[in-house]
Image (tube, rainbow, N blue to C red; front, side, top):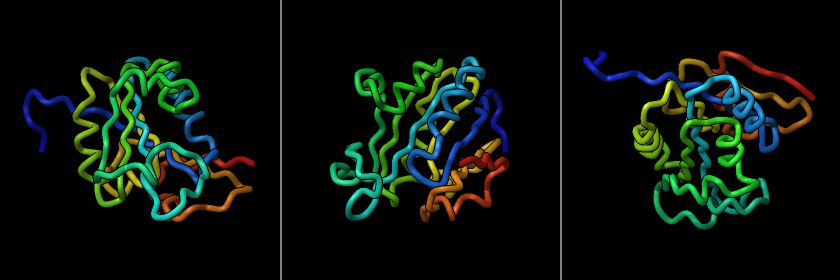
Length: 164
């Protein structure tokens, strides 16, 4: 049911088979053309060692159910996906770091922080467990192993982009 005077924001999700599958590339290309849209980077913690080998500050350092980062210094840090979103033209960029059990609540709170945007492009696999986007894109890198979170959401994609 729609509430009067409440604008419903359009949502596109971009998920993929693994790290380095091209999700951020697709998000940034979309942001170049969708003027007035914003970006939400979602990173979900893993139990044990991080499968990517990167130190993004989630798997070992996140001590709460979720953390919503809006600090412009963090968002604009060169080399971060969030910086690439901003450089591509995102009106607003937020980074949600979450434990698996805090993702649903974290998503709800992060999405509510977007102000005066035409829509939100969300990068992350696990988000499709909790939201029904207007359009879901899945990046399938043929040479890669499909991680568990990708197997769970590929069937929810409206478009599967295959390469490699």
